Image (cartoon, rainbow, N blue to C red):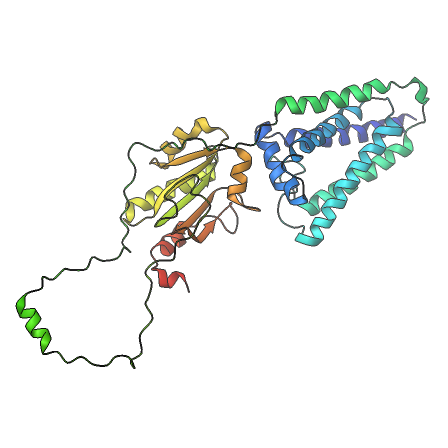
Length: 369
C-alpha cells in the first residue's frame, strides 16, 4: 500500500509540475506580451477571432494553473480532476496531431511552454501521451473514496481564482483605433540615391542651329522597330506601412520590425549602421518597435551606433505587421512600396548583411530577374 501511495504521489507531483510550468511559461517574459504572442501565433491560425481570443487564452492558462494545484489536493481527484486533466491533454494532442499532418510537426514552436521552452508539435505529442498514460495509471492505483465528504468549493474556488489572476496579471487592452505619434531622431540620416535619373542638359536654341536643321533630311521611321523603354525603377505600390511612415512608398527604403529588448534585433541594427558607413546609397532606415520594454529604445540605439526614425505599436498590431509565421528581427527592402526582400527570425531566413548589400546595389532590371 505504501508503494502504491508513493507512486501515486510521484505521478501527481510530476503532472502538477508540468501544468504549473506550462501556465507560468506562457507568461514569460511578461504576461501581456507572452499571452498576446500566444494568441497571434497559436489561436489566430486556429480560427479564433480577435474579440474571443483574449478571453479564451486567459481562461485556458487559468485552467492549466488550477489543474496544477488541484492535482495536489484530495477533493474529487479521481472523479473530476484526473478525468478533466486527461480530457484537456487529449484535446491538445488531437490539435497537435492534425497540425502535424497538415503543416509538418518537426519545426516551429507548439506554444505548450511559450517561448521559455520551445517545443515542436511532435515533441509535445509525445509529452502529452506520456502524461496521459501516467494519469490513467494514477486513476487505477488511487483508492476509491466517499465523495460525499469531498468539498466542491475547493475546486471552484481554486479554478476561478486562477482564471481571475490571469485577467489581473494581463488585463485585456482595447484594440487601438488611433495611430500614436511617430518619434523621429533630431538628425535624420540623409541618403543619396545613386539610381536616380540623370538631369538633361539644356542647349540654347540659336539662329545657326535653326539653319543647320533645315539641311537635315527627315527619314520615315514608321517602319523602324522601336526598342521597349527600360524602366529604371518599379511602379508605385502601396506597402501597407504608409500609416506609420508617410514616405515609405517613395524611393528605396529599409523597413525594420524590432523588439527593443531583442538581442538579435540589436545586432541587425548595428550591422545596418556599419553598412551605412561603408556605402552612400543605403536605403533610408525606418523602424517599427513593438511596445514591449519600450524604455530600452535609447539603449537600443546606443548599441546600434545611430538613431533612426521609429514608431512604437502595440504587441498584437506588431505581430500582424510582421506577418503570419514570421519572427523578429524583421527587415524589408522596399522600392516604391514594392517588397524585394524580407528577412525574418534567426533561422534559415535570418538577416544576411552581405546578401542585403548585394541586393540593394542591384539596378531595377536585375531585381526583376
